[in-house]
Amino acid sequence: MTAVHYFVEAENLSKRFKTKDGELTVFENANFGIHKGEFVCIIGHSGCGKSTIMNILAGLDGASDGALFMDMKEVGGPALERGVVFQNYSLLPWLSALKNVTFGVRARWPQWSREQVREHAYKYLQMVGLGDGAEERKPFELSGGMRQRVSIARAFAIEPKLLLLDEPFGALDALTRGNIQDELLKIWSETHQTVFMITHDVDEAILLADRILLMTNGPYARIAESVKVDIPRPRDRTTIIHDPGYYPIRNHLVDFLVMRSKELAGGPGAEREVKAETGKPDGYVRVFPAEVNPARDIEALPSEQAAQAANQ
Amino acid sequence: MLQSLNMRATVLAFAFLAVILGIWEMANQAPKAKEALTEYEILMGGADQEARVPPPSKVIGLAVEELSDPFYDKGPNDKGIGIQLGYSVYRVLSGYFMAAVIAIPIGFLIGMSPLMQKAMNPFIQVLRPISPLAWMPLALFIIKDSEASSIFVIFICSIWPMLINTAFGVANVRKDWLNVARTHELSPLRTAFTVILPAAAPTILTGMRISIGIAWLVIVAAEMLVGGTGIGYYVWNEWNNLDLTSVIFSILMIGIVGMLLDMALSGATRLVTYKE
Image (cartoon, rainbow over all chains, first blue to last red; front, side, top):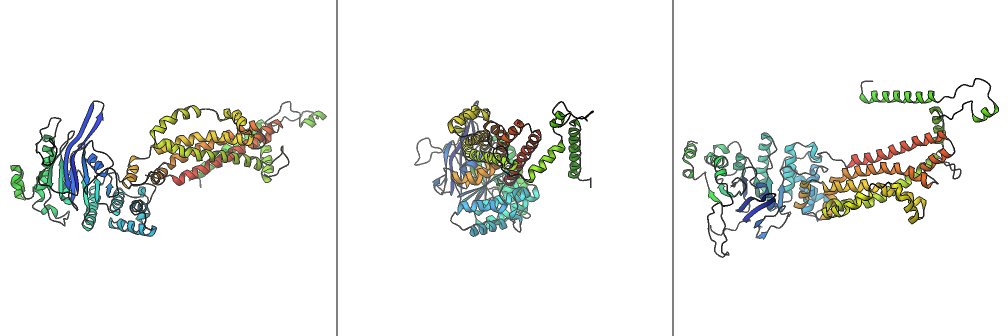
């Protein structure tokens, strides 16, 4: 592995919880990086610790072992340079949609005038398709999709260096999800934020991401693969399925989730590829996820899928 | 017209009122004199051998009379009902607001810090069940002023519901909202005012509403003890004057003022309640 300087870098990140019967290792030795401006998704089954990784990235939770760096500085706690979109929206119910966004904007730029804050917040609400009166409504008067739009606007409006999305569309119906995915793609292409997103949805990950991290089942989960999504942008939900790379990637991901996430699941004595790094103390081992590019690497797939992919 | 639920409820309520007043009026009629009244009987107001509860017609008559001039002051034994109620409301509100000023910040502290919660809990558990009037002798001894002592009794009885509800509301603010505050790097003070206070406000106001109810219950008893002025004193004084019509009238006034206080707090609660 050549020394690449990632914008965000996780170094042997582990999380253990104390339980009645001893220690439970949720995941261990997670190593991954995110480049500036990159859109990275992470997929894995429930319980593999995706949300815990997200909380550590946000600074809301601490790792048991290992370290996390952003912009060459260690992440020690929550900060405005990392915006979070929570799964359950987490809007403040006593504030209107606009006030929920200005809440973040005012925290980010306390020296701004009231008018400036309002204008900035309103701009981002319009970017997610809210405005014309909807901004004065309270969250309980908004549909689930609109609430998540407000939550996305709040996160984008503070212009964070890293945007963290925790299954943002998990609770939405398919039609709404599609629409908001489009909005998200649009804003992302305008702002080129660095994004890290948790999802359960394989198609969503292919549509949005530059790279997809695959996690094995927990406990002792690990990040097994880093799958490159080699499909040109701008992408569109209706045409992306015709890209020759689409099905090879999709099949690779589904195969991983159905079969290999279980097989590759670690245990306390799981074998690890030992690779000594220069300039580090003895015994220091870092295992990076295997990098794969199913779209350009058809022969690397299991034969059955390769045949299927070739037929596309 | 009778279709609306409110309309039907109003009609039924008036029917109940008529039945109750009717029975009350009937049951308390003095028997008709069978022969000419003696001079003594005329002086005593009739041939009846036992005293009767005054019928509603008399109470209503007194109410009209009293309420048409509620603020007259003819010396310590004869003040208008408005003045007496005014004294009681003044004592209740002063004790109540002093309690709020202390209970809400301490409740915040207890709600935010598990350490403080554990350290303060024994004190709260022991002090809370004490009847507020039990403090009266000690208050009179220390404060040496009956007026201030009754305010202190109100203070001590209204503090607990506010303290406990504030602590509960603050401790149960949703973790998600606190995480929003943390990811926006809000200072503890700003988090307290912009996230925790609005989130806990409905619970705090519920505690304040319970407190005002208790305070109004206690002030009547406290004023019966310390005397001088106030609606509690008025009730007891009219009992000593054997004026039962005034006693019943003041009981009704206590109920009406208590209801108004509760309505004010319930209105305030509605202002800070949010839907999710």
